Length: 236
Image (cartoon, rainbow, N blue to C red):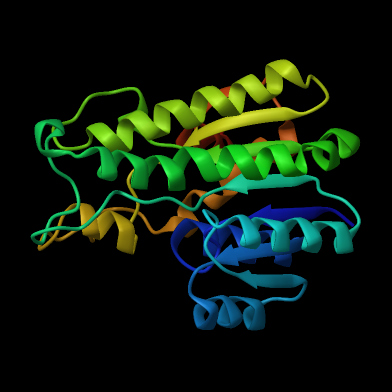
């Protein structure tokens, strides 16, 4: 039986992916800071192993490693947990000129440091299973938007680390995947007071992510929309 570990699995895209993998027969270790919401996810599908905690915490990462060891293998590691930044004065995103070193450290620990440390801790299991490393990224990692500088820089760094792991370990496949704008709580925080109901729900991009994992193309940067179109009826 295939085993996956998905960080940030209690809400949004992480939750949708955890449920889809579990329904597809995977054993899924799901991480999240909200223990109650994580238990609800585990109660919604079979074969979900909830491990509540903050992925930036070293003790929690050791708990995740123990859960993987108990499962006996690791076929898919998904870095989905992320932060926009520190919320101050009603805003989370702000111009780079207003950012502090502490703001940078906060974003970097969640979006870069934690994925780096967790991948390193679990790399031998991924190599052994010839598994997949998948990091959820953003167009802000390649394009430049006002106020998104710290977040975008962290996603660019995450992409670089993800694909370098593949270059150093040819036994695995690694993907930095841009899911596009989604109707999530995190996206709403980026646009306070705005109506984001025109964005697709997270479940809409999950088939594209699953197709990517199943098809195992060359390691690289992809958009979930590209694979979603290929899974639609009548697609070439």
